[in-house]
Length: 111
Length: 112
Image (tube, rainbow over all chains, first blue to last red; front, top):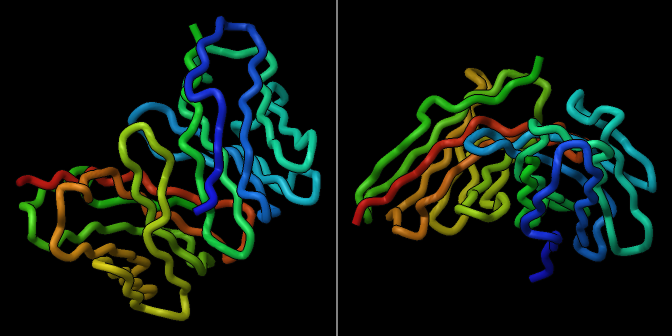
């Protein structure tokens, strides 16, 4: 069964550094998403992306965040200057005419 | 504003018993609901979904019930197994909308 893949599985960075989280959505999907989950809490919506542009974003997704689909297969989330409170699991998801499929996440630790 | 919440944060059941996980939602405009299972270290995994024009949908060992009158969703797992131990999230959406809103999650522990 096709799946959403995310790399790296764990990223450790220092406060103020830039990080790029990478995702390969399921190949025939057209809608892409990033969610995050702070340890022990619920999954929170960050941003949705369709037709090469952001279709919706949450208040969490401020100017420090950006997304890009640089080619036909990758979908990235960039955090420009990380803060301690950005530490969380970040999940990429995609869908076609189907329920949302999630990757296994990248654990971001900001020190 | 929108919110989806769960009544019971932790549910412990004996192996072989049936489990019922509950969820309340507040956005009456939501017309599509999904249950996800999340195992430790993994992303949410789709279990079953239901549209608002239905009040019950069955899958393999799982049933989702939707009560739109009281804005309540439940997930029933028959003959619960140790492999069912996980965190279960309900989520709501406008069908084919851009944003899935998750509830707080219920931990299901299955005792052997």
